[in-house]
Image (cartoon, rainbow, N blue to C red):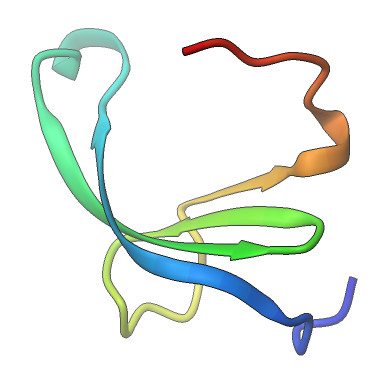
Length: 62
């Protein structure tokens, strides 16, 4: 995947933490590209905290 892949949508999102911190919601900068969803600590952060490859998602629910 190229770092220059087209950004479909970007913005802040509140994400619930896992484990012992499951009661905490964190504000993350999210970048949706055609093949990935990347969560960053802030808009200026270069490295993603989490990277999800959309092709690996089998199903979702609301």
